[in-house]
Length: 113
Length: 117
Image 1 (cartoon, each protein chain N blue to C red):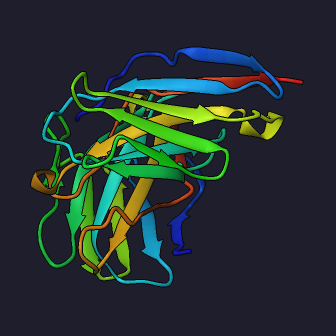
Image 2 (cartoon, each protein chain N blue to C red):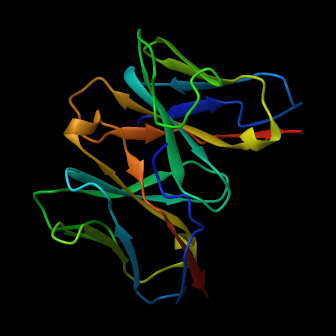
């Protein structure tokens, strides 16, 4: 199957600080990207998405940036809260891929009070 | 929002037995469902695409005879782990997409944790 099977990198931030989580995607043909949050023992939870015709999209406290030139995606979380502690995955999809989502490596975010 | 339900959420079985995991879309019809496997501290790995009324499409390296997928209705897909072994112990997650045009509306279940003794 596809995906990177490495152990998760971790990011530790202080409560109230901004967090930036990075992701490198693999397929230049991907045209749709999603960030998911996964808490321990649960399924992924949708956070925000972005299409390839955009380079930035903002949600509530979150911003996703897309750089197609270097195939890089980032998730910015403003004023990080303890409840934001989780594992964050980026996922990519394309119309030529049958709609399936391929997940990136993931980053474990730990928020210190 | 749309809900995808998985059952059982946890299952423990003996080595050599088969285990069935169900994935249901509760308030929408899903022509396509996806099955993922996730090992501890790792990412989700796509196993197969389940298509209602036709055979599943398996990702490279996934044994179709080991992981049987059946998508008999628009609201139910099942994954059967046959002759389970301890190395099959993992977190299995399904996702479902509704019948609309591809819009990225992919909803995930809460996962099923399989432990093979």
